[in-house]
Length: 434
Image 1 (spheres, helix red, strand yellow):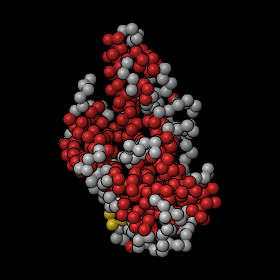
Image 2: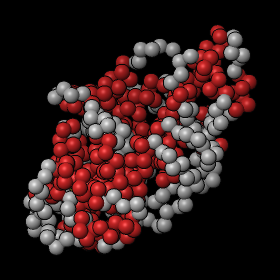
Image 3: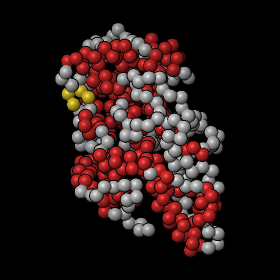
Image 4: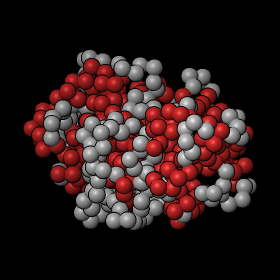
């Protein structure tokens, strides 16, 4: 198994890695390289779950960039690519290919003292586990993207019993283990190889496992405005990884927020880089927002939004070197942007002083901290107790989120986010009322 990645895979890794580079031209280079990789991949034959691991990883890397950082930010660009959808469908249709059965695993494992055979089994396991983890990652991306942009899922099934028995990835300790004898001990003690085998009382989960379970719980939930959500078939443990807690709040926020009307209203009739010229859509969006800000859903969404923003705020001092602080993922700043808009709309719909923003004498960071501290209530129902005083004080919060987006120098979906947040914070928006 070569340690040197294939050229296209290496290029796709650079596409993602350049997004975290401090070089001023890194993101432009990343976008140009992504376009080139996409053209080359489109010339490949159909890629299936049995294709080379490097091709599978390349498709996944390019899809992540396409969804969250691509140069174009038009409505059509927030849809998954055909190549990703086809590969994901093939994975779902061939889940049996990826199953690991405890009995068969133990039969194939040689005694740990036969190192040559153990090494061969280990190499085969790495490739098979990589495919399993790619399917899990595709499921996570599909779930998060459908929720965060309120679009149709690639996988449209519900999580009824036995409808989607996803692989359960090995722990980070097992996956990162380089010593084959230690790996042998870890893999033979693994308790679950699929989600249906999981016990509700797992002692601890790493970030990847925890994210999978969080998305698995939410995958059966409808988008905002659909019928009542399904009851989750699995309740993740309370001691989630911090990054997964942020994912939980972002997904929960999306189930209570009419995202498209919110984006149209806040940006004065723009949606994902496309100008909404239909007057009826504009008026309907404002009417939806008026109804939403007075609803229970808006209160729930605001509670999740403030939870997410506060976690981000508190972690900045812990991870000052990171450009994003909710996990370093490419979608982090989009989540923060939407959370900030939710807080703004909730407060905007509850204050009479819409013409002028509240005055901010302190820095944006201090004002944001004051707002988030005041809104730090244990339950969503308690938001109403502080909303009358604090809900409209979002100027500092908007400026703080805008500074985070500006510091990173994002493109694509967040091209116009800075301008939107600036107009809302400074009271220069032409949107007089919903």
